[in-house]
Image (cartoon, rainbow, N blue to C red; front, top):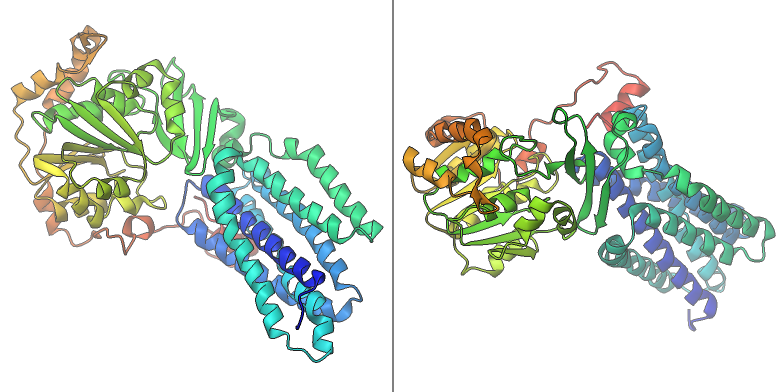
Length: 533
């Protein structure tokens, strides 16, 4: 190509638009299915695999279309219309089907990923043929032209995570972006087919259908993905916050405690705590937070990783011995959740509390001067994608370097023995309370008398929390908790896995798939692809 003409520039722009729309669809699928599965680590690989297979099939179909059609650009317009509708309906399908059948709901999602990617994948070979066909027939080399179109496609795909991922997901709901991406594809198809009334009419009809039916198809979409077969009983959320860092939902649960409605927080589709600070009516095992009275005699400086709804922050703020609390939370949406409850609102507003919306590792690495007596992490389920980041030896060594002499790290194992085993490989002493462990390089030696005196240092509204008569039972329970060093026992075990940044052991170790049909059938195959999370 000796000169750059308008058709070639249009082809490059169209290639960029296709790359952007295609990668945006992939990102929306990952966000949807990650939410539906509680952030299983397999989701990214599954979506990427089906997406790439679809792109390959689409490219093959596009190449064949250029050989059999008089106007390949019409094929591109038609497949864009189909891609928009198939991706839109495919995204809606899991929300509609999961409450009836988990296997078929997930299978419909993966089919929608592959089908949508295939239809978008038709575009590249067709664009190359339309933009470069005449030049090639005239004897020119197609290589440079294909290179420029490919570059435009890559640039468009690169913009998707930057614009959609970092900007649009922070300001628009997931379902709105599903509609917007489909509508954009239809508008693009209409522009390509403005001389073809039938195709232009098809694009318009698709857009009208999306406008009319998007609301009903995507009503309570995230709640349906989350609750699945329990949705008819559970109903929708009372609060929903979507940011680029994740999806937060609050649900009014009348079944968690007798004769009370509990505000349950879900982060990324899994349980993330409740808006409760009461150690007696304990809907979230908040009594674990009060046990810090027996872990360290005087924890003046505290680091809390992960705020969620702010219940644990509120408990820490109520402890008179604590002088400063640095909270690092990656999702700023949790602030709105904490502000919705008077107890948690008072906690995060306390003068001793400083909240930093950042990644925990990044914050600790950026503040090497910060030293703490207590590091508390009410970590999420160990099997979730990314859980390794706060459970590995690498992270524990970083935390260890930020502890003052006698400092303690106290965090949730979510009942993983590998997590406790890993703690024993980094710290000299490890004790357990319920599903939490505390680790330190100093022995846990707070006496019973000091522990009981410390428990009386938790105050609310100027009064000791454990001075009320109804708290007597919980006070006695916390006073009698035995903190026996378990580190030697863990170190002797050979059946457990050390969690490191490289092996992602807690996310992938001993993954079992229950309820599968061991015999061959299409149902068994679907179950193996989309097993019950």
